[in-house]
Amino acid sequence: MAHHSHHDAGAAALEDRAYVVPKSVQNLALALIAVGVAGLGFAFAGEAWRGWSNVLIGGYYFTGIALGASFIFAVFSMVNAGWWVVIKRPVEAFTTFLPVGLVAFLAIGLLGLHDLYEWSVPEIVQHDMLLQRKAPLLNEAGWLMRVVIYFGIWMTTTYLMRRHSRAQDNGPVDERTKSNVRLGAIHLVLFALTVTFSGLDWMSSLEPHWFSTMFGVYQFIGMFVAATAWLTLFVLGMKKAGYLPYVNENHYHDLGKMMFGFATFWAYIWVSQYMLIWYSNIPEETSYYFNRQHHGWEYIWALNPIVRWVAPFLILLPRGNKRNPKILALAAGILVFGHWLDIYLQVMPATSHFAAHHHGADVHGPLFGLQEVGGLAFFAGLFLLIVPKMMERAPLLAKHDPYLEEALHHDQ
Image 1 (tube, rainbow, N blue to C red):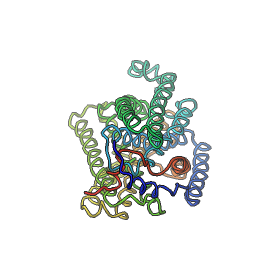
Image 2: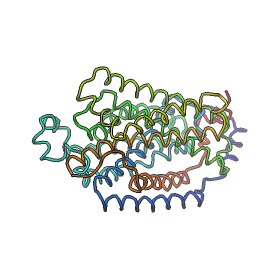
Image 3: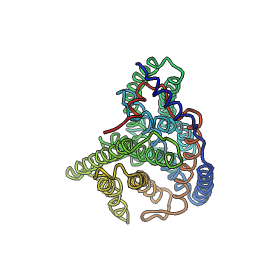
Image 4: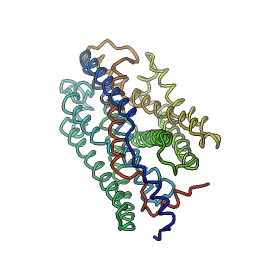
């Protein structure tokens, strides 16, 4: 594709300012990690199941952000999207968090399964016909092996996509661009399968008697919305710090539309899953909601669709709000919190129920203390430490991307 040399010079000038992680971000990251270590230490010193529950929540949350970013990366590469080229580097950097997720899930698999998953306790399985039937899939060795397979696939495809994207800076450009079209397509097929099965392994199997055919889509859409919200906050923060001068209100508008549209798709899946289970009223299916609509959980359950859809929908509905950095940041912040609440609601009612019945824990409703803050803070700190550091390693502007012109002059 032909390049416009006078614009190239402008792009090069724009790109002269390499990204440097602000000291304040590093300090915040280290402070969060310190709080996280203290909170998780406190959790493990008290009740191991609660510590592992929070490692699962935090690990799954931020693995999902990296995976959501990988989906954005793959789709936009595959369809040759133009407008996103100016925010491509933060998207790439998000995907570099995956090795941390791998370590977290290996730790759970090696040390924490018996505290979280009833199918991993032989005494329970021998008295439960259903768990015996599911044993070929739900067993410790298989669970651990699949963790390695999932992360192996994700880390390989995202590494290759990043490598081709960075190599564009040195050419041959068209070849690298086409490679990422192909890689994006491969990643999306593998992504659909691995996100579905990892969701069943890590989340759904916390309640192994329950099942839902929508669970995989539900996991994917949650990750995608949350990754877009985090990306929006990163872009707004970098813009405020004097980076990304070429990002304009039209880019904000597109990020706002993505959050608006896909939060609505999340709501559609949420309602569909609930309605199907509600009106068929089969005990094995309704148990999931029964556990979340009693003993104090009902308030969190009712809050979930409000923060994941109602509030962002109303905030982002007017066109002007999608172009206003402060309002966009508010909507993104609500979605970032909403995704955590959603995962907390998938994990905690299940693990606390299991702990009360099989570990003799004294739990009768929602738990929120230093332990939960610690789990979230620990992984958030690692995310804020690693992702900005990775952005230092590449030019902020993909100046030889064939769609850069379109991105620099993006107007609607």
